[in-house]
Amino acid sequence: MPLYIGLMSGTSLDGIDAALVGIDDTSRPRLLATHAEPMPATLRDGLWELCHAERAGFAELAAAEDAFCRLQAQAVTALLAASDTPRDAVAAIGSHGQTIEHAPLGHAGGPAYTLQLDNPSLLAELTGLSVVADFRRRDLAAGGQAAPLAPAFHQALFRAPGEWRLVLNLGGFANLTLLPPAEDPRAPLGFDSGPANALLDAWHARHRGGSFDMDGAWAASGRVDEALLRRLLADPFFHLPPPRSTGRELFHLGWLEANLTGEERPEDVQATLAELTASSVALAVAMARERLDAPDPARLIPCGGGAHNRDLLDRLARHLPHSPLTDGAEWGWPADWLEAGAFAWLARRRLQHLPGSLPSVTGADGPRVLGGIYAP
Image (cartoon, rainbow, N blue to C red; front, top):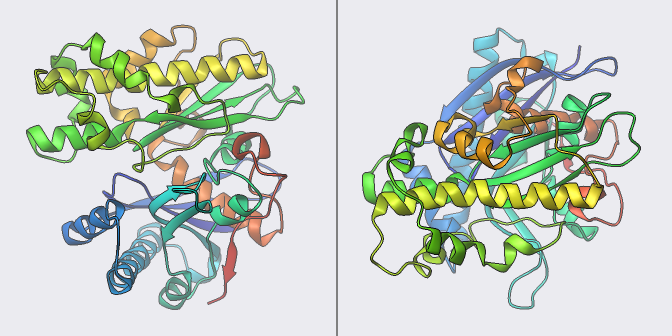
């Protein structure tokens, strides 16, 4: 079975996920080995500043990209060593890069753009492997949102006869994939529902320190501020029809603070942010179901870091009581590795000259072959 490596670093900036995936034409992709390479604090801080900078110098961008690429190479080397996989057994690496800014509708009247720091030429040099990278801009060029890209992979893994399924990625931001039954001719629908861990982590770091709220315990200790929740949900993004995608450009602490009175208890704000994620997911699911005239999904498959947040999962269960939560590990894909797996799968699609995007998800003018190939 041909082997591919997928590399993913999300908006949490906590590290690089590396997944070794076996993919052929006769069965579903198989997750064979994984490695999580932690992000050094200095690199994380530098990337964080770039994500929030109004202006950035070329030297800053180049230094961050170089350090990030070398960390990716470390992740690949560690993954191969841990799995005892010969380098020449790997067909290619699929590298997502690190998103710095995503503006699919442009900014201040300018053209649409999406920026991921990556240096696939250097990664190919350091690893001795072919690298497929720059997946998003081809879809953007075709009039799409360039995000989310994982729904096509979700379809390859989880679409099945006889039932509707919902895959929910709870990373820094939440996106969903509504999958019709395999016998249904309609295409999947996927889009971003709104913020997830990005605001929860940032508010927790400001008031409690640390990088995240373990199991959502702090959020669970607070009470939802219903007035604040209504103000947050009034943001036009939550009511836009798909296709749609978002990021830190819209949802950040400044956005939250603009909706605070200053009288709120910090733990109540955290509870309200958790409820915002669950409420906005429920709104998005209702929108997707209406668009496809779909019943309640028979399964809700959570993935991403938020899949470990017990409080958040409990809130989702209350909002979506007819769609029981199901662990993706039942299909051999634990929650933490779907995103990295998606870019291994997309690398194979590129090498086979097959489309990697779904126009029903991104809104592009048609399916497109995504990414560029960088030979070793």
